[in-house]
Image: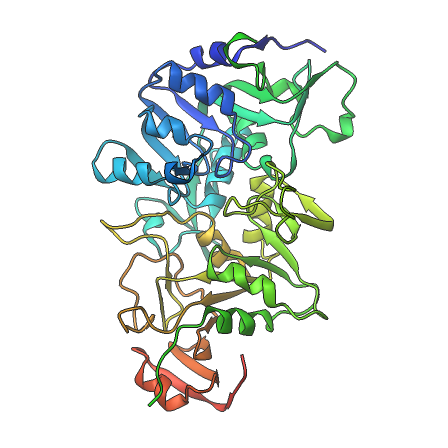
Length: 229
Length: 221
């Protein structure tokens, strides 16, 4: 197996260019690549489109700031495509002020749109959202007398993932509920960077236990190593 | 004269008695989460959490929280023996695919057509739908959990929701702190009332069409 380059979080952040769509793993911050996120904030990333489950938790009063919330606060995004913003009042403020375009997508639909992008599908047919504002502007398709919405695939330029463990080939193993959108996003983006807590030698991961096969992963970042890995 | 006193515990206790052993149940954030505290000891339900697990257990002991193990509200939780983790596509495959028996959600409004609104007050508060649209679409039975009246005294049960819908015609059961309602044929059917409230009080304090169901009975929630 080919080894994947291990780069610093700062080097990873430098690969993200203005105008790009970044898909970031994590569910309210659980399973997000915090080291790369911190470097993107430091680098002054701008004009990005975010695809993520949510805009994480921004609760500075109680000292709780998770996941992509620092990037929201630093105005890195011009557009966010997420299922939930309720735990980040800054997203709501930017939306109401017309500073950031917020697109709300049902969570299961978001997962399937990302999955479709990574698996060669044009989109998926889902009953979710029929009869709600979500159906506006979408094609409705009748299959066996049930109405579905055509939800298009949602690809990205860069996936920023978090995994518990990788081998040098880039095979990934996630931990518990920190898995969430990470394995889907690994398949859906042109460039895939995984921040991991541990890197082991090729052959040390049981192939039966690998969640994301190495062919999806381009670069590894060792978590906790900051800018100078 | 009956004075209304809000009781989330009454709602949680009654909903907890709906389930049977083996049922797969998803509890929403807030009031629905309380339901988990009141499931009778002789009933074993399988709790699903949309962030990627079945076999959701109680909160960890102090100091035992695992940063990688949370519920859908980002609170530390545990997983029971026999539980399993999965990604978000599998999680919503479980939900949309009809493999969840009951979903319990909080509401801003619920109406007699089974419509439910809980994700958006235009211009004011827009938390987003999260997984609620998939849960209401895919779960076998949708239970709305809500206090009967707002702080202002207005009925949470409506003829027609005025807020953007989370779910169109998907609600099967509404449990409030005054009674248990089934949604059928464009009406709320009161099947149980919780004393001191009476069917008469409920009819007078619900801004919707309520039918007192044949066999409607007083019930200790």
